[in-house]
Length: 178
Length: 66
Image 1: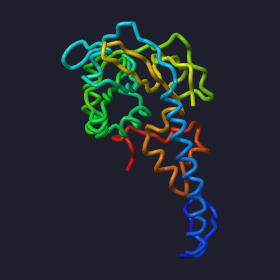
Image 2: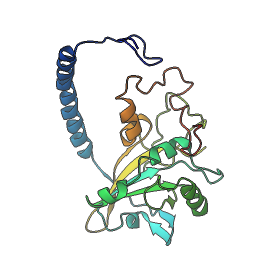
Image 3: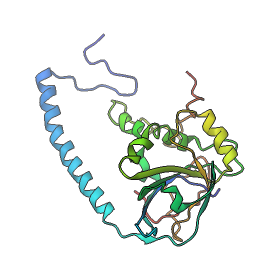
Image 4: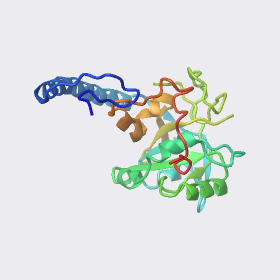
C-alpha cells in the first residue's frame, strides 16, 4: 500500500500531514459556512415568491376513493407533491423517480409534525401504483395517488439534455429550472 | 410522453383556498435526493462525466447486479 493510494478514476491526489489536513479542512469550512448562509438566504427568497391561486378542481384516485387537491393536505396547511413519472401505459414507474422515492422513506411522519403533508402522484391507475409500491416496499412514504396537476399554462424550458425516456412534456408545468 | 419529474408546493388558508407556491424540476429537485448529497462528499463525487447521460447508472433498487 502506497501513501498516495487512490481509488480507480480518482487519480493522484495530494496527501499531507495531519496538521496540514486540519488546516486545509478549517479553511474550507469557512467556505462551506458561507454557502450555508447563502442557501438559507435563497430559501427565504424562495418562500417570499408570490403565490397563485388554484381554482381548478383536481381529483385524485386514492385508496379510499376520490380526493381533491384540498383533501391531499390531510388537515395540514402545507402540501408537498412529488410528481412520480408513471404513465398509464407503463408497467413500472420511472427508475430515476424510484431513486428519488427511495429518499422518501420515513420522511412523511416528520413533515406531518411540521404542518406539512407529503404525497406522490402519478398518472398511472391506482392498481398499477399499488403493485409497484408493493414491489418497491419500504421505499415510499404513504400511499401514492393517481392523477395529475397542471399548475400553470407555461411550458417548461427544454431540458439541456433529453432523458432516456425521450421527448418531454409536463404534467406539472412550471417556468423555472435550477 | 407526457410525464416528467417534479415537485410542487401548495398552501391552504383557513378559508380553504389553495395556492400554488412553488414548483421545480430537473436539477431543481437535486436537493430532494440525499444519495446525491452523499456522493458529493466522496472522492469520486457523482462520477457521471463519462456516462451517456448523468443518471444512466441508476437502477431500480431491486435491479442492481450485486
